[in-house]
Amino acid sequence: MTPAHPALGAEHETFRSQIRRFVREEIEPHLDDWEAAGEIPRAMYPRAAEVGLLGLGFPEQYDGVEAPDTFYRMIAVEELARSGSGGIVAAFGSLGIALPPIVALGSEALKAEVLPPVLRGERIAALAITEPGGGSDVANLRTVAERDGEDFLVSGQKTFITSGLRADLLTVAVRTGGPGMGGISLLAVDADTPGLARTGLDKMGWLCSDTATLYFDRCRVPASRLIGAENQGFLGIMRNFNMERLALATQAYGHALRCYEDSLAYARERQTFGKPLVRHQVIRHKLVEMASRIQALGATLYGLIWQVDQGGVPVAQLCMLKTLATDTLEWVAGEAVQIHGGAGYMRGCAVERIFRETKVLSIGGGASEVMRELAAKQLGY
Ligand SMILES: Cc1cc2nc3c(=O)[nH]c(=O)nc-3n(C[C@H](O)[C@H](O)[C@H](O)COP(=O)(O)OP(=O)(O)OC[C@H]3O[C@@H](n4cnc5c(N)ncnc54)[C@H](O)[C@@H]3O)c2cc1C
Image (cartoon, rainbow, N blue to C red; front, side, top):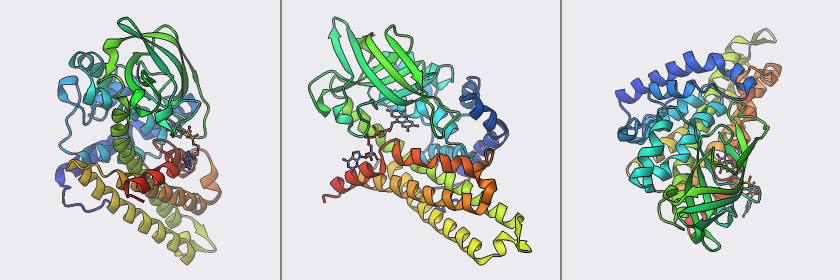
């Protein structure tokens, strides 16, 4: 059900096939074990780099893999999501939100030092913005970084941080100035900095991706680790959110596709009352409704990927896309479990995992309520 966008060509399909093969052969067979272990093996990161997945869209000079357009990155997200595991997308994807501010705003020395090991899969990177006191209201974050000579002393807490427990490099949002958005900066912090402690969090889904609370107690971070200008970090955070929201919408789309495909296959095979489920009108109408909503989402999504690729920053549309995608997924995943009956409630079934992982997409990277409010502001209501 790939949307037929005029910007898509044979190269995109070849790329999609390569990523799909990697996912089918090297990820899907191990998912249950990785979920049970609570993490994917570190060795998978260099492997993902080798197949061109990890560094996709990052500059080659830092060991990234240049992508000819934004579709490639989103196709990669979509195919990873079709594995039926959001944890895998989150674990590999944490660098995709941690590194862009460094690429866009960091000094040349900082980029040369921190980007290559992460893009080669040797180090793990995470983005730390959310705090125990709140995640939606980013402009009021409280973790402080006080200037002390050539260093900053960072104190405060971050929570719900993807890859936070295993990350070697943390892009951390801190308060260096006065209240509000004008007092926020971004710092690249090594996770072995004295004064930094972390604890893991148990959660509903994304089980193969670690999530952590970080405690900073006067962590000494060199001022050379400032990402961009002091007190200008909020802009970097907001820019990051646009691509994150596009990726989260793409992830929801990939999961929804997997739900639909598995449900259709199950409905063809499962017999009730003497015939396959799909021969019952109620079930095939559910499948058609799933396909309709996914098709509508796909067309909107691919249209916006193209718009972003042309240099547009359609903030309201991205917010609306995210809620459209996550609402679609919540409905589709519910119907998918229903079509699977008891089997859909059992661990080891892809739709069971996806169902558990729908909510995080409606909350993370800007919760639906906040997305609608931001869209309303952007639309001038
Ligand atoms: C698994 C997981 C991974 C995550 N990974 C990361 C990460 O890597 N890095 C990171 O920095 N953060 C991460 N987060 C945090 C995530 O971005 C936040 O949870 C999210 O931004 C919401 O913040 P909050 O949880 O503090 O909710 P709150 O901000 O406390 O909001 C609670 C509820 O109230 C609603 N609400 C808030 N304000 C308003 C309003 N003005 N009007 C109406 N409703 C409102 C929200 O929509 C939400 O439904 C992750 C979260 C999860 C669950």
